[in-house]
Length: 250
Length: 218
Image 1 (cartoon, rainbow over the protein chains, first blue to last red):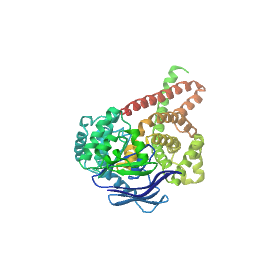
Image 2 (cartoon, each protein chain N blue to C red):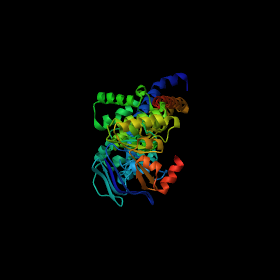
Image 3 (cartoon, rainbow over the protein chains, first blue to last red):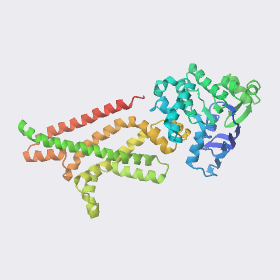
Image 4 (spheres, rainbow over the protein chains, first blue to last red):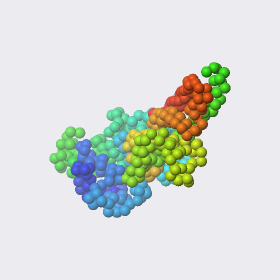
């Protein structure tokens, strides 16, 4: 579903991604862990053009969506095509980024109606189903500012799912939450994983990674240092830096 | 000036006030539309578009409105007969609209830029185009932030609209001047000033109400 080849990204002189090779298959749940500033979020954001890579190739669902050499585009790709591909990738942000001027229901139906031109009534029905799934059907007419962080993040997940994405990207979805609200968001994500959604999750929740991930990737200083099944990486890390990171967080 | 005299002049003062309000509101409406495009131009990635809009704003904010009025009313016909505008209303509306567009453009640009970057990212991640993200997500959120500065601009323009009296346009200022010279007394300026105050107070009140209405989701 996702393939990255020799992806590099720099912000000026700062190299945030160095020669990243990554493949995610259908139905996999890949958790990316590592210290802050290691490039985890940048990696995730370069999958849907929120960050543009400096060199390398990115494929989504078999389609080449970014190819660069020294910051120059090698392929022509229209804004429309990029938007189409982004719509296949649901994204959940650390800071929720719900649309504050719209109610919960309006947030969820906005993109299917404006982007996909789907009929309103069907979209509303589907949205209510999704809100039931995240346990927030009764909040559908509230504005996001009235909801707790955990509730907002669950709405954000429902909003992303409303586009029927093939892949879900999570960018530290629980990092901005009060500790007691983390569980409700993680349980929604676990449910998604059980249903077979392909997911890439940047997270600091080691318990979640251990329980749900099919594969865990450890990143440090812009590189993928280690990549293994969760049991292996947590109980028997190979790399020194992985060991010391896990000692600190576990 | 006697009370009776004042009462005989009141209808013309009110008529002038109506023109002042019309002139202000219509100019702000045209100015807001043009200002929105200028603001989007200033935010555009296209350097040339950005420059053109910057230049427009630079000129219209950097020169006196009075000179802009002179230029449109007296200057344009000198350049070419075909540039003569039919009458005072069009000239006054054009000058005030072009001028307020420059100020409103900067107000709108600031409001758009104050919206959290995450909003554009969320819209793009959902597959929206730049235009869809702007019209559905970013611009609607900027409304509430626009209300206070647009209120200020409207009040400033209402007072500045008195300048159009120099081209003989019939509005509150021109009428007051006429009465003052006929009566050889400046006393009429006091009720005229009071009328300006009533109008600005009215707008202040309306904008406070609007601000409350648009803050429901905050």
